[in-house]
Amino acid sequence: MWSWILLFPLGLVAGVLTTLAGLGGGMLTIIALSLAFGPHVALAITAPALLLGNAHRFWLHRRHVDVPLTRALVYGAVPGAIAGGLVAVRIPVWLIDGMLAAVTLLAVLRSLGVAKWTPPRRAYPPYGALVGWVNATSGGAGILLSPALLAAGLSGEIYIGTTSAIATFMHAGRLLAYGVQGMVTRETLARSGVILAALILGNLLGDKLRPRFNAEGRRKLELSTLVVCVVLAIAGLRG
Image 1 (cartoon, rainbow, N blue to C red):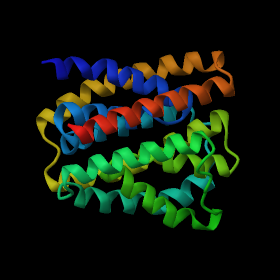
Image 2: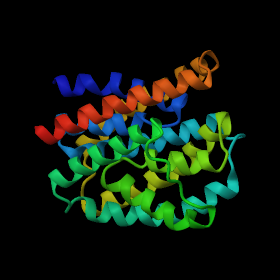
Image 3: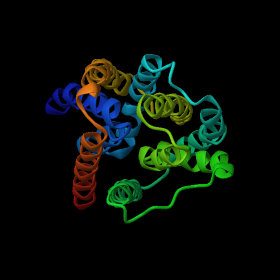
């Protein structure tokens, strides 16, 4: 019962965080749910909610999207997400947990300035394929997508809008693959519905709160979120 109670506040926090910082909410949701239901179920629960949650955020920021950049990444991200989704059901639990820990740790190192690598612009389609595959197999795509968009000079509203647009296509790809693999059930859809309602509310709340945070404040929020993700990922590995 407690796991159902967890869904709404978790989705609410995820919506607010992603709208404020551009990433972190989806990753935090998947890691937290993996502790409650296991990583395979967590991936299936979050796919419909994050698809529609990002679509809603995309709609809110539809006038602030870098269309050429979105297209370049989506060309690779959608096939990558479908391919990752088709193998996700066969990936061992310990490997998914390990990938979650690795991608969240990489995110913290990037935020601290230790890891600074970003892909060149011409590499965006194949890089998008990697992002999509990681998204479908561990849910950690945000920390790979974010540096590519920041390196392209995106910030503020256009960063949020472009991130949401790309994420919408990626989650659609992985949801399609999960459905083919039989990972999506009535129970996972019911849980996803609870998270979706909270995500939409969180998106609206985050949109109202954005003007109150400067760039430095959002950076600190992003880093603290990622630290929590690392702790949860490590807890999952130990569990």
